[in-house]
Image (cartoon, rainbow, N blue to C red):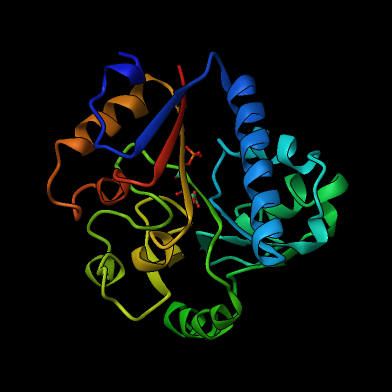
Length: 237
Ligand SMILES: O=C(O)[C@H](O)[C@@H](O)[C@H](O)[C@H](O)COP(=O)(O)O
């Protein structure tokens, strides 16, 4: 299967690349262009990225792009509820691989807060996110269960997090994989991004994407709620 075999809704743009390195470079150049445009348009740019393993090559390529990084605010689509010193921290991943070189001048709004409970941490993050401007560029990944950000199927707060009219910007979530306790931006915040990009690699994830397109119930495969305009999908075998 190739991504060109999938029949996406109008307004969804699919881009196929030969390998991870070529995808990372192309995505970095396109995102850098969108950030420059946002800065030209309204004086600053807000970039929200996802964690995991796949984005590392993209982060490294983007960090080397020439643009007024001091005018860029970077934040996260989700976070594991672990301290930034923890090996599983998404904030640490972004600091290690993206906020380097020219991009070291960017500001970072992390999601992690220490608290007595995950719910209290989410309330503190909710307050902190009042400082998050509207998102110019959003980078999503996807798990093989159809999750994106930390919108996991069957997670206790999924219905509230996926409510298009919901009021929360951040909610506590539970993942099936360690670290189980997560913080996620909610669907209304994510889907308000001007440029929404889904970056996935491999046949397995392409088949999951195809399955999600057939899946009317976004609870079972939350990614399905994002497969409409304006979405750009980057894929390589
Ligand atoms: O915190 C996270 O892990 C991410 O935000 C998560 O949503 C990720 O994008 C997918 O799980 C894919 O992860 P991989 O790129 O590692 O497959």
